[in-house]
Image (cartoon, rainbow, N blue to C red):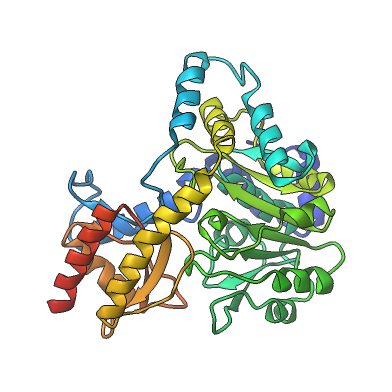
Length: 392
């Protein structure tokens, strides 16, 4: 996707240089190849680094290896979603031949209690996350976010100011500190539950941001992991109330569609109008749209998957507690742990030697490493490998 003359003029007025425009253009046309763009590319970067340290190049994953690096859902798409894919796949030579994107938009609107024009469909949430940075920030109007957190790569890449604020002691976002850190931000970004900690931020923090932010700033709430949580409150009702909130959703997590791609931004039409030029060009994968719409129609699907993930996660937490391993209690399909005397990257590499690939670290917490929750079988292998690392 190239930047139009009108977009270029608008971006230059916001303080971006022509060099920045080139970066924005490259981001929109080749974003998936950039290492900060999504969980998959970041996990690949970690694996490449491990392979280089062992003197090798990227190689195919061993068939009996455990890959719990990218917060994927090993359950995959539901039966009804797969049936929708099979039905629409033969029509793949057409752009939305039977209105798949429109059906998806209508289903999201119905499910979330907003009007259809408050929904902007996307191939996953990464494109709309990137578009949010382009639409709402600039070299002088920052993207203010948690540290550690997810979603700061694109703003920094395009030349926007990025302000990172430490999480509270309970690992929730500190809205008051975010406002103090930059009272003139363009976007205040809340990932709720947070990635990588899997922890929940209370609604009062969102409301604080809305009450104290600049009038023209936007609160971007990334709810990629909300379906795994028992306590997190969605902010789509605030969108329905026409607040300055844009909610991001993906079907890559609880719905098991990471490789199929479906997601959206939910916001007031005027806020989406600023985002839209940097987002999808309208050519969305019909398989993703059909699968996601069908998944939304399945009663009890989210609750069932939440329970499965929670049971496996809590079993691993019990194991870690027994071993007296420090970890952050999470409400999602990932968590962070610490092994005394080892950096997170050392733990990662040690686990990799046992063909269990567990994830990555964040610069602010080099001693911690993130682990995704896989199947019961995968987590049993994780525990076996972890025992060996501890006893080495």
